[in-house]
Figure (cartoon, helix red, strand yellow):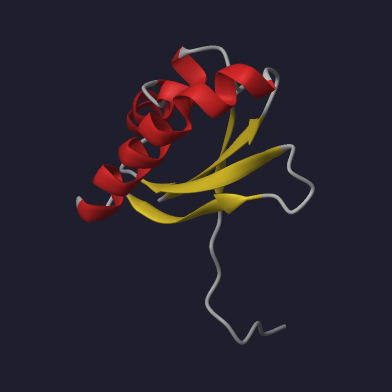
Length: 90
């Protein structure tokens, strides 16, 4: 299953401070096959990570360990995402 983590920035200074650890966390999970995609929103107000996990609880555990979240730089909203194969039909 796929889980979308919305990560709005709530503290710009903390975000700058913890960004390297945030990126390292996501890169490590990507190497493990646990992240499908990640990136910032173009408005500079946060980003999105798509986790690959067997359960919501597994995805939540990964997302809650993100240094951007543990530091209080960003909030977390995690939702199950139904990825569809393209092209879409009927």
